Image 1 (cartoon, rainbow, N blue to C red):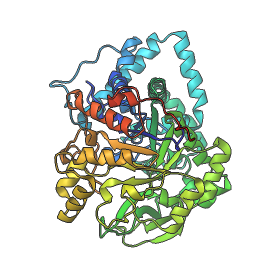
Image 2 (cartoon, helix red, strand yellow):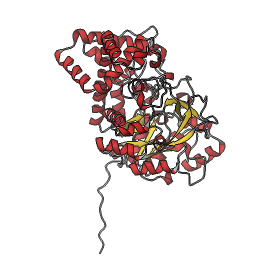
Image 3 (cartoon, helix red, strand yellow):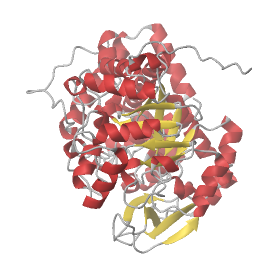
Image 4 (cartoon, rainbow, N blue to C red):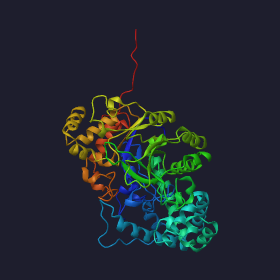
Length: 516
């Protein structure tokens, strides 16, 4: 994908898609949504991280930086292949507009285990060969991940540092015995990941055939309880008991007087540099198997990051330390070539962050909701943009455009209403139009903004757990015909889509006046 071309798209996580099985997945509704995007002239579909969810059902605290979420594996293809009987929904079915993870996760795992058993019994020779070839191809991360998941199940879900010392410390003899003892469980997790990869690749190919590129999302940090940290503890700042000595977060700012203590272990950047950043190269290579371009969350952490003592209950106590900088991206580019990366450069941004992003030639991000708190020179106002940026009306961490308008100060509402020529009823379309008509190469909008939905439909509220975070789903009734028609016209008018969608006929062929 060329980040320098003029394009637009929609942010909708896979789990927010419609579907009958409690959560959005790679099934028929994903293909139908790709058709909807194509029909309204969009060429980008942005997802959140596709890794397994972690605490608080967040996709940003995963047990693996490499694995795919089992919840995104569609059941229909497993039925079609004869590995799974038609699933019987639980009594009352599932909520079409919210994912109830407490109900959905165990039900889905039951279906996947039944499909894995069906694969063992009914798979053809060609299917078995394809599975085995894939396992061999992905062994560098798959072997540790599948063993980690088997051991987690064997130890009642407890974190890896509480396992017997030989397993927590990865004694080779203990690991060998575990692979034998838990062979069936290991094969199950391999099967699930193979299904994820196969289905993801098929959906991506379908999107490509319709001119749609996938925009992925890569969190900067990994979770402490993860296969990554367990497999290579030497790459993280851990003590002799496998506990972090310092953790990640951001200092106090306008969003919170305590800052944000994320709790992720911090990297030993010096050790990663000694290996020419091989772990990061492998991670980016894996990300590009699933997406055409990806956003790196908290990009500023590569220039400088906030180190918080692990004993601190909040993020007020800490210090800034220098990140790996350009050397990291140089190493990855040497191995993989030009990197199609969007830098999430929001928050407390210092000159070194801008310098790193510009040296790497990565586009940054502009958020329209943030544009109206200052004056006419605010960097998020569309008339101030350079071309090489991605403009969003908001992200998964923001309120919806309608919700933002209702919660904004009187001054912000007045300024936005004047600048965008809008009111409460059409602020979402005014923001989308402003983003599309800007010079920014890329413009992306959460589906909630295309549909003009209120705060009750937001995806996540940062710094909170529960409260419906990560649970939102759309339905086909919400989409209807009108939002796609309007989006298609605005996209075409701004030079980002099929001009025929504007509904004014074929434009006349341009002519050059003759001078006499």
